[in-house]
Image (cartoon, rainbow, N blue to C red; front, side):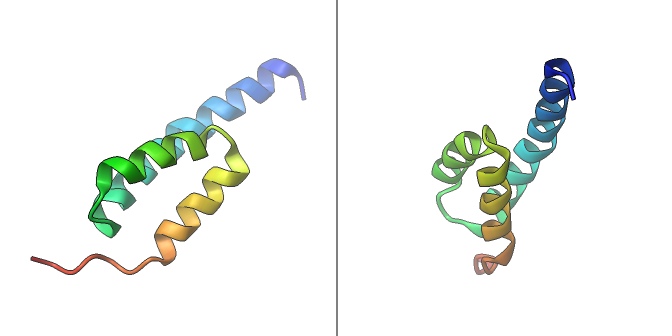
Length: 65
């Protein structure tokens, strides 16, 4: 895999991870801005971003108001 291919794969990962983190942060936490901020930096490194998304998926939804 060339460096260009790796860059394209990373860009596709980031374009898929960012909206996923944004959606899950709104559904699962009360501190959406902080979660999105941490998720942005976690998504820069795909293995860490994947673990971050997995943790959000396993977390219970916040109670409805």
